[in-house]
Length: 283
Image (tube, rainbow, N blue to C red; front, top):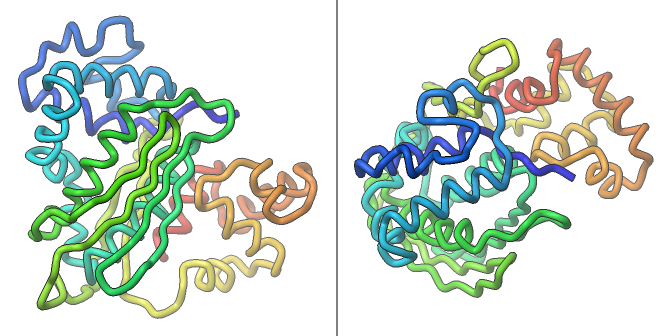
């Protein structure tokens, strides 16, 4: 069972709390990191991340105060997404990027789905994977993040209708109108830091919407993958475990392990995290 998140996910509440001047002694009490050391970490425990969220929410005055804080601060706490405005075609493209690519990598113990419901409507679902302690605070803060994501693109907030339980959320999102595309796709590639590898190297994936060819097609051709290797890669790059890959492709876990070993060799990388980062780099 995966019970960790990428450290980059924890930078957001830390940066928001520090920006508000919240007392760091209370924020980090009993946690195995502080504002400086978390920048050098690769992953943090799920329970530590949830506790951090709960403390920020309490310091903000509860759920309503935290939602208002996120409305003011979230888009500034994720500067990578703000930079994506030069490479993203539309608000919908940003939501899809976040919920089909970024969040499944940052939060391997949480499941996400994205559904396109029409020109200005999408549906997002989020739930804790089996055995992962639920976090109502995460779902509440996710609601605020969903509503305010268009601010990254200089647009008004989205309208969000939610159905939320202790470990599941269903959001129907009405995107703000945009008379023109936010920006034409450029050749510039904007990067998002996922965390720090064991040797201290930053792990990034880069966002580039310029090519018509899909990332999987590019990776298959570049790394000369077999059809089965490409199928395994298509699932792995969304942050899924070997068991989940095996269940989805109806094969044994040891078969998945073999394919991943081959994928690492063909991609010229040493770790699963590097494989995922290289996949989204579009080299």
